[in-house]
Structure formats: structure tokens, C-alpha cells
Length: 221
Image (cartoon, rainbow, N blue to C red; front, top):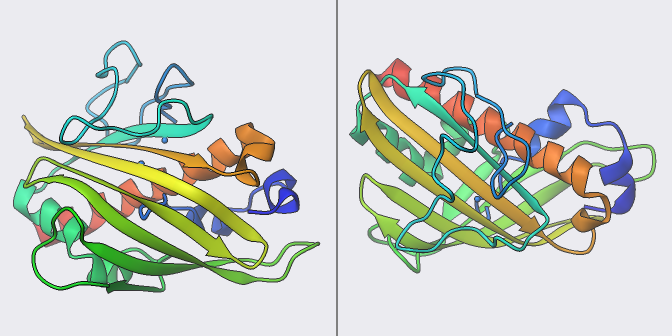
């Protein structure tokens, strides 16, 4: 993301494209001692003291030293298997995530450590840059079936680059459904040029992702 992209006032559409880098593409509840707030659909108000110190999968989490990171959660009233299938069937993300234009597995077989997928999402034009498409290449680092996922990778576009993003998802069955927690960080010279704005973009993307996941899973249920 170029400096002009970061400093301009985010629009709703622009915020949506930044669905975490999952791949990058793992945060307002912000992890690692940053701002915190509850998400619509949460079981109740959330504070950093009420949440685990860090989200992990296989003992690993986000890059705790990265200045840009965000964390949030939502209670989804659907079976865990439904939620898990939606999240790991990456090639079908465009069916329930409007900001995702395409997603292709770069390997075959089970969704497991080493699995890779490449997905695209549009970025609108600004006063100083043309519209472009962000290409995100994600590599799965850790998976515990029906429990957690951790992936990482870069995002590249015309005038917009995120060198690396690490994204963690945790899924916990609770009374009334499944508590889905997610956390992500970004790193790179362009996005780190304006940490507050980049964090706001990341947060808007993660909130939109959870909202779409909740809607899709509950509709299936």
C-alpha cells in the first residue's frame, strides 16, 4: 500500500478489500496491548484482560513485534463443522465474501501445513493512484482440525504492497454456538509509514470477514 493510499480517508469499499491478509492473508479488538473493543455478535463486551494474551495455533501466533496488528472475535450460532468447512474451502470464499474476486488452491489434497492459495481483491482508485487488484499468496503454517489455523504471506498490487501478513484463527465451541477469534499483523515499509491508518484498514477488513463468515454459517445452519 503506497503512502498516499494509507493517508487518505478510508471509504467503506476500501476498508472491505483489506480482509486480512489471510494470506496473509492474522486485528476493534487489537492484540498485544493495543486498543480493544467488542464485535457485533460477541457474547459480551470484550477487553484485553478477558481475552487470552495471544491467539496461537500449534504454539505459534502473529509477529508480536509488528507495529500493525488487530484482533477481534464473534459468536457464530452454527455448528463448528459448518464454520470450519466455510473457512478452509478457500476456493469458495468468493461465494460468501463479496470483496474476494477469486481464490485458487496452488496445491491439492487436505488443507494442511504447506497448503497454498492465491486470492485477489479489488482496490479502488484514489486521487493519486489508479484502481488495482491486490494479489495475496497465502501459505498455511499450522492447522489443528476444528480448532485453529495460521497462515502467512505477502500482498502485491500496483502501488500497494504488504511484505508479509500473519493471520491466526481460533474456533471454540461455547454455549450458544462457536466463538471465533482472529488476529493478524502486517509488516512492510509502505504500510508501516502510517501505522494508525493501516491498523484501521486491517481492522475494518477483519470485522467484515467475521461478519460475512457469521452470516454464511448461520444461513447454512
